[in-house]
Image (cartoon, rainbow, N blue to C red; front, side, top):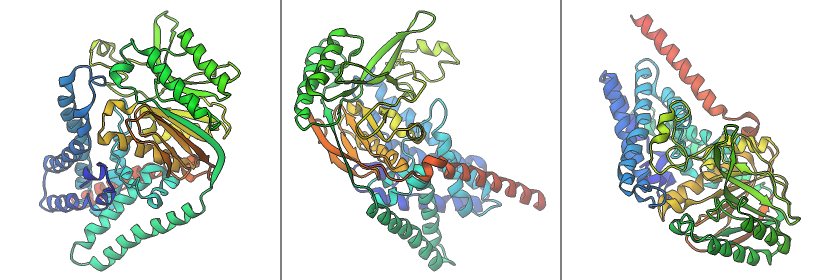
Length: 489
């Protein structure tokens, strides 16, 4: 059920009860005095089924994404097997503590804490956090403005616990009423938030979706034709006088700012149309040791002929854009799995815009709430997310990736423009609603207005307090369980 909730279609409601079978099975094992190994195995089985369904698109990645084609199948199985470890950890922790503390109290805190752990470190991967299943329900999604997607995950865990209790004898009526209230109250509150949401700012943007196949983009032999596509579409977009034209991640597949002929042509485009061009591109410089450092970057070409400082992607994709743990074990860099070996950037960069300063999230960065929060706290009034989801083919990953960007808008009450090479290219308002979109796998231009910013959110001000609160609650539960065990002995 949880895996299906991440598939295309309005299936997010499946997550409302997806943990109930797990809770039933876990309670039975706790009551039977199951050992730690059996508690872990239960969650591992749950996680393996969930993540193999959720990550099935790894087996459909393009040959450009995985240069050794046969690796996509073991990569899918390895990803599922690794991520399932967190499911095992969830039931091990919750089941162990439930011997002394009620499972209904322990489970939500354990789920959120394990999700926090899964999102951190060198292999941090918050994709498939349960809260993201609610992206299609705009009122419920507004919870993220209070405490990010983490609060939505916590809400889901509490709803599942109440539904589980409603199926048990004894307190069915009270639990059913509690579940109804937990579902209805945030929905009603979210509707009121949406009714009071700000309207359009009057500032329009144009997003260019080039639809360039990867085998052409990265061949090195078609840079002239690719640039022509983006220039032609941008000239068409400029007719509507947008405040900015945005191209996707590594749009032309070249070192655009370092290749003088291409840089001049983009500068002339901006000057001729009077519209600045913001684009992603590969970039490089040289370190103090004289060795080149390559970046996945983005920058602004201004009509006056100037160029902004470049922003370089800070959070790189493990195994795709970098080899994890390489800074501690340099020998890992000699493994050739088709990774790009980019160098991470180290700072937020704000770019000038008619709607106020904006910051950029490059591809994978849109799945980390702290990056957009840092940008907004640094002064960004809207966000740009550029990406090249062509790697995913026509799979569920395209929608999953775009859905996470919706939460970045809600969390900070800022509009977001998402420009993808093949889609989904969208404009989102400050409450995460899609106001305009292009069809996938079709070249085109998306013109549309940005919404105004909303009021500053508790999440922007306070950060991930639901995660911290869950970790504290879990620590308290562990302390209580230990004390009760000592007293029983």
